[in-house]
Length: 424
Picture 1 (spheres, rainbow, N blue to C red):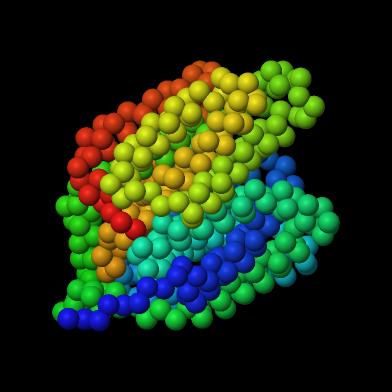
Picture 2: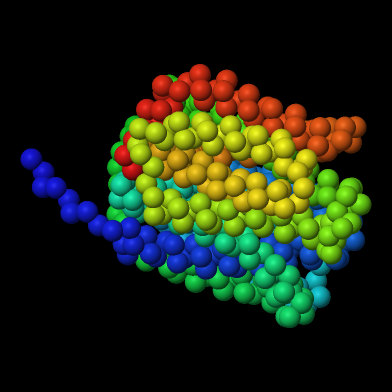
């Protein structure tokens, strides 16, 4: 009989290191994301070229994750994480130096955005696949509450990018800061002590070439997801909910801009009012993260809680734009709390359920499908909003999300509950 391992707290060396590294990288990301957007808009003066630039970042997320998954199940995810951050540091340092010379090339920046989207999408698969191994299973829910809070806090700090742009007098210093942040973050990530073992459990090569082995691993990963009815239902539902949520959420800003007269009584511009209301959602995510850090959901009730959350999120999607501003801000705060609850239940349950040697393939497929859902939702919602009122389109998308919750998740409640309703 093996001796029982002593339980450790959440804030172990590895968890602290990966969290500090993530915070440093996120700070740089907040600054550089604003800088890239404002630079392209300033230089081109074209909303279309600006939108095309933003889309070029999203395109690799439809391909790279599912292609990276099989490789990340055979190689060190820790090395992939810090090497990609070192690469990002070099790219932003190079961009800083070029811009200091007065250089600007829109096609080159499109290529830069494609490369950056590829790096970030592969990084996310590697990070999500390594992260559960740095925390004891019973602390996973707390760990993901911290992760979710950090991302929301950084989103709330987005105006810092605008302030830094004004104070520093341009975008070049923002890229220099981002390069330093990525470099420091990579140095922290390199100090993770966890010894990876998933490579040892990978299927033997048996003399197969790299391409043939990749194809076999990819087929094995797809077959695993298809054979796991609970995981398949979760993947399909979140593809549908990213489709509906991104479609509905993407029309909030156009609604505020095109109906500015409705908000004339407020002492700020309609677009500014939209950013304030949106900030309540991120504040709700932070509050929800704090609750999940302190309070543990009963294992046997997690699926029931999740279904309630899914129903309420889709309801809020449909009604938010019909509410007066104070009530809209209140429901957006609730929306954020519900969103972090959904995230916490889903990611802690799936990542702990997955075998380590297959985790990257699942994460790659999940990220690809949800990115595809988001992109299709945004495109369809934008198209429909050309001929229909924004609020009508939002209601339509919320009904799609509500239907997906009941037709996919509730119908497969037994299989999904077997994944969700576990002690973590």
